[in-house]
Length: 234
Image 1 (spheres, one colour):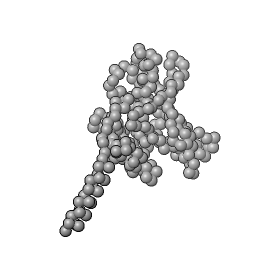
Image 2: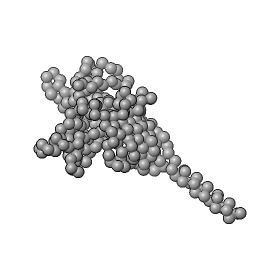
Image 3: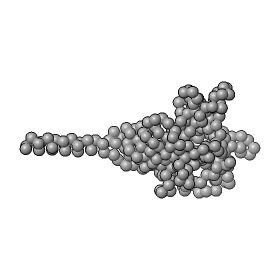
Image 4: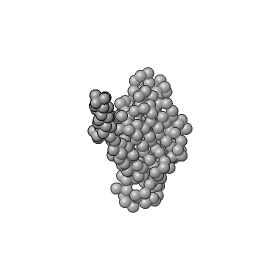
């Protein structure tokens, strides 16, 4: 009987050790647009478990799971109205659902001179809804403009543009007209605990660089420090 007891207590101790090693610490981080990231990290300080980006506490912008610091399984992005914008499976590397109504409002240019590729290639897609995309880039553009002109007022119509290379690496900028002069501003999206992941454009198994653009209206009448509202311009 003592042998069985020893085996039992040894197994119990091993189970407890495994549980401690897999302990997760829940954390939160506030993004520049005042949305909130809720995530967990393991003892190695790597992302592990459920990951969410929340708007207004009760609305979800993005939801998925991390395993050992890598995105895993199904990830969902949501529009402002709560509808699913996309579902992407990281294990399969496959886009399972896309809101075609929202995505048809964006402009895409594939970086190739081949007309067949331009016509047939898949478009680049952010693992984030267009509403979240506008919220983050619009907030950064507002910050950049106010840094140069603290008295900026009214509204500003701008193209929020992403240049995506064939590996899915993105750089951001905004195009607009001020006093009749075309202006381009670099936007730096450098959030703690969050980055927009991109599916690059592809055709016949080959990835292509591309440009992804959304028209939005930035309101400078709103006070800083509160959740900003940005309007799609169709």
